[in-house]
Image (cartoon, rainbow, N blue to C red; front, top):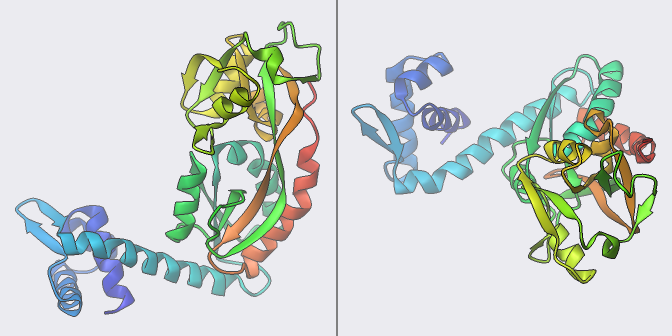
Length: 300
C-alpha cells in the first residue's frame, strides 16, 4: 500500500462519497476507485461498503481507519518539519492546547512568534479536556501540545511552567477586598461550574478539593466554557475557580480575583510524539521564555 492510497481512503471516509472525494483530491472518480480497490486487495478485504448514496465503513474499514489517519497525519507532520528545519522559516506549525490556555496564553505567545517568524503559518487546535488533548497528540493531529503534564507521555515532554487556579467573584462580593481565601470559608457559597473542569482521582476537581476541606460545593450554574463561567462569576452569580491565565485576559475584566490558601497549581508542559525540531523547537523555546512573564497575578 502507498501513502497516496491511504490519503485517498481517508478522504473518501471524510467526504462519505467517491464523487466528493475525487473533487477534493482533484482526480477522476475511476482513478480514485481503482486506488481504493488496490488498497483493499493489499489489506485482504473490503474497507468500504458502496451504497446507492455514499459509502460507509465495513468492520475491517473501521479497524483500519485510525491507522490510516495516523499515517497520513504523520506524513504531513514530517513534511512540515522538513520544510521548517532550516531556521524555522517557511511551512506551518500545528499547536494543540486546552481552551483556557488558548484564550489566556496563546494570544501573547502567537503575537511574539509572528513578529519573529512571519513566514510560519500557525494553526491552533483547541480541546475541552486533557484527555481529548492527549488523544489528539497520539493521533498526530498536532506537532505540539501545550497542557498539563500527561499521565502517559506520548514521547517527548518539556516542562514550561505552572498554571495557577484562582477564584473569581464580583467586585461587590464580601470577599472582594481580600487577596487570599481558604476553602472552608466558602462552604456556604454557590459555585459556577464548567464542563471543562478537570478530573482528579476520579472526581471533578472542585468536588475533590472541597471534599478534602469538609464540604460539598453547592452548584448554582453549569456552563460549557470556562470563559462563560468567569463572566457569570463577575456578574455575581457565584464563585468560579479557573485558570489565572484566563482571568488575566479580556474575560477577566470587572471582577475580583482571589488565590486559595494553600495555592492551587499544576505543572504545564509541551509534549509531542517526536522531539521538536526546526519551527517546533523554536516555538518551545519561545514558550519557555515567555511563560514566567505570564505568571504575574491579575491586577484587579
